[in-house]
Image (cartoon, rainbow, N blue to C red; front, side, top):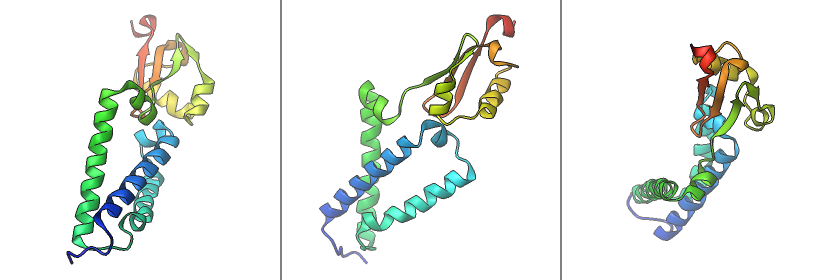
Length: 158
């Protein structure tokens, strides 16, 4: 129950590699997908977690291995949070940068496509902000969290 079948440092190394791998894969999928999980996204994350479990624990199902792996993942997550807080460069790589979708009523279609954001999703966010059309928008930004923040034109809001 407590005896490790692999060295503790191998568990830390494996957990670190898997953490970086999963972080990179999730980052590459785009901020919109992470910000708002659809049911199929949740299923993907659950299956992904199960898939990488064996790569992390190297077949060691002891309580000690579980504690080492859990502690490693939590410490790595804390370190990444600290790094993104302290370094704008690291923040840009790990979390990405906000993307302007609309500026002064002009839609940036290339950004919409790059972020895999549908016109329907964009219009839903605009309506939620009280804008009936793209021309009513001063600026719309896709934030790092996947949320779309909208500032209406003064004429449209007044």
